Image (cartoon, rainbow, N blue to C red):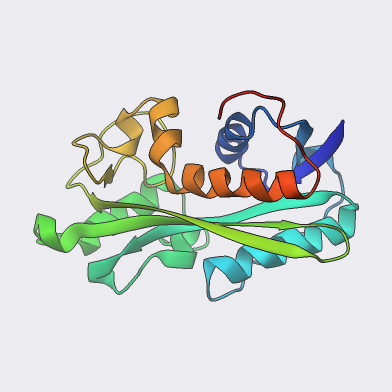
Length: 205
């Protein structure tokens, strides 16, 4: 069975990706399965630049076809922040709690209409020769006034997807994966993988 390397050590993200790629005739591995990979600096100005850099360099270093994603939260009233800095919004030592606290502070006094936001995910798939393709998924919504829910990670306790009253962190994993930015991008990525010779096993997404 062919291997597909996910360019991530984020356990939450790995679990989401593995679940959403179920049914493909591949063995999904992560950076934890491949020792001595140099740290790749995410210094791009866009999600696409970061995803492509991670996918191409990781594939080149390891010899595996690599899937990398870069994703984040875009808030209209903040001029697109936190954007590509979503993971380190509150500084280099940031964690989910600090990032969410900073976001709530910056949106203090903003009404619901001005709290519109979206999650964006760009997935890049590269082979060791540097042949790379990208797809993008987006989930529209708004930022809540306080954290709610215990599922998910990152900004999930603050993000209410369009058409819902619950935050991502209050939805089941299956429901979140169905509507999320990463879920939308992975639906498209499955087609790219099939074109690269990773056939479906006949299971539903």
